[in-house]
Amino acid sequence: MVSVLFVCLGNICRSPTAEGVFRAVCEQHGLSGKIRIDSAGTAAWHVGKAPDGRAIAAAKRRGIDLTALRARQVVTSDFSDFDFILAMDQANMNDLERSQPEGCRCQLRKILTYTHTKIAQDVPDPYYGGDQGFEEVLDLLFDAARGLMAEVKTHV
Image 1: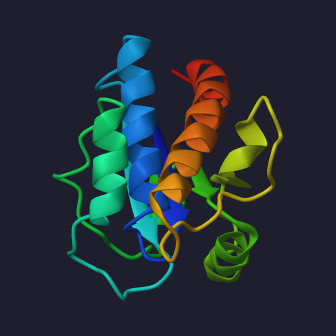
Image 2 (image 1 turned 180 degrees about the vertical axis):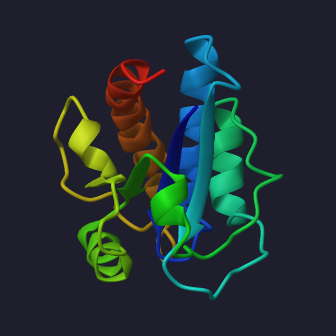
């Protein structure tokens, strides 16, 4: 089974949204249950909390339910448990690279590596902004999820 972990700072906005988006894309491709999908944060501030209410609302408008998700922090075993670990931005990538155990075989990349449009290098953190930021995050993540699916399908 192929496994994918999405990572942002606190695991309450971008990475749970990425998890929900990729689950929806997997379902569209008939791959539900064939790909293990999770999300985590590099920081522990929100461990155990539900995603930000604005992320939940924005995702719901697009038919994605994030309500069951709970924040967790990246742990060392994630580097051996997941095939793909995808950071939302360069700061998250830097944190992951510092934490990555030597000899790790996972593919550690930024999520927007998989976009078709290449509008941005990083998924912006919408936490301190308005609702439009959460919509922008969804647009970027849907684009990246389609590209990621093309890669993941070669491993399923």
